[in-house]
Image (cartoon, rainbow, N blue to C red):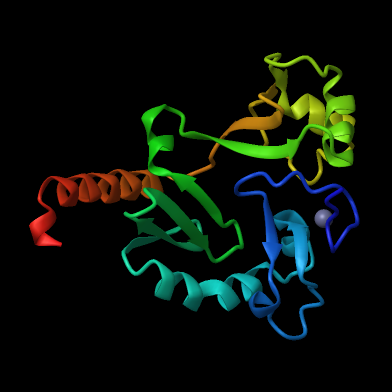
Length: 201
Ligand SMILES: [Zn+2]
């Protein structure tokens, strides 16, 4: 089972809602321990901003191509990994997310998160909450979350959860601001141009 180091409850591992804090990511004095946690718990503890600041330099160094913005007091940078065709969103409020370029193909932008592998205790708990262990059946994600009594950790979660080829997969929208979406479009187009003219890289 994957439990939050801060509240002790189940962590689903949803993109944008959860994070695994590594030892080097921890700002001293925040009371955050290494391990999986709800971003909501980081925010309630008042540690989300210092935690985001602690991983700030890593993002800049690891993915040096980015576009930045400020929405409703929250600073963000959308980093582009051309090699992996992925975005890495850094936000000053701790709402970090990693998702593929391919997520832009549908509106609203959504992504798939692998939650658990069938056969584990974690998967068993999720399947019980889903109310079915039949492959291919889409169950509303908010319903599963409600049955796990985690609605207060994932209040904005939408989407579905499905058992596919032995993996429990959540398909859910990404809460991106309009300006962040525009940045994503620009970065993906730029990467496509590079691919067409590799000499310029
Ligand atoms: Zn928690």
